[in-house]
Length: 451
Image 1 (cartoon, one colour):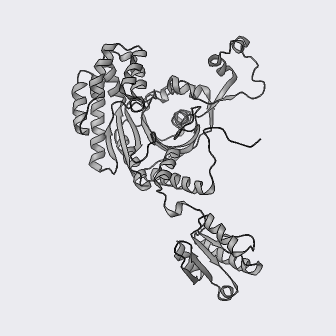
Image 2: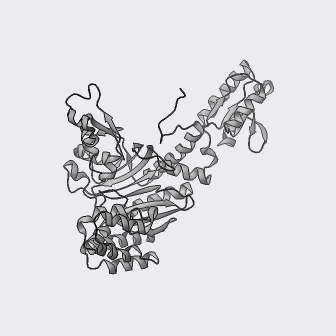
Image 3: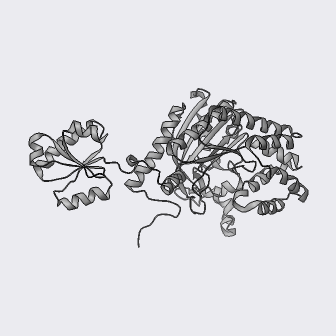
């Protein structure tokens, strides 16, 4: 049988990994610039940590890990006969693969609370897993790159995170739209239309407005138990238009009767004005349908879309004032963002935005002319490596054509040749594979050219 990998997962070649490491390196560097420090958490968490944190839809997408050993011991046999998967799963599985990095981070903060200095700023770059239906831009295993700060209520954190997002995409040269909303605005909307208890139903439905259109959203709202009057009352809010300032003003007027809604608009105004005062490369947008489908956001909601490629959200996040409360540590405010590295990778591929240095690891390949020449080459290679230049020697004294074909196929920018005359001079013939230009230089001179 031909070997394969699970749907929704991918292998990455050395050339692809060079591109991915360029993304991770860029994001990691910007995280550091903004004062975030790295942590790591296990791939698997206790299901009790994960369940109930992502809403009903999110719970269904958790990969559950079958208990080791006799996993049927103590299980209610009636549930097996009834094929009751929902009630059976918790008896068969105590652990699950992490769905995101935010809930494990909240667990980490509570577990290590006595060791942490608040406010605590961390970043985390690790894979996550979702039992989702694979499709373009949606994978079952993918990397997230998160930055979170806990222990501070200040909206300066939101402004800083938006600046951080802007800087990452400026460096990656991806044109983006930075969409903003506030969970308090959504709560105000639910209150205004007379259905405050339906806040989750409303947000889950209207979050799909870009995907399924307003008519289908309205139909779903009715299915979820909202009255026709409530759905009708929602329409003017979903249809506000104009510039960012004009839409904020309209929203302020519409939500004036709601205290929580008005507070949401006030927070949105403070964040947008703060970001605009500092200047942005990205386009800033207000989207009142933006809910991100997660139950734990309580304030600002952030989503990033690429302007030039049709793909889902490439970054998202927001404020989650009560997330650590579920782990017995109430009153700790947090705000964070998550970069979808796999979707960013697809966007950079689609737009061919990788710099030359992100396409290959090796900068210089030495041709192998024989035992003595290889030994001389290896001495020069040691000097180049000491100067931070990535080099390799073709291991076999094969025909020149075969070695040059390998250099071309692997995208090596420079080829070095050390024959008898070069050995005598302690030099190498260095060929630029892009221009075809060739010069005879010392290792120190070669290092200056290549770097």
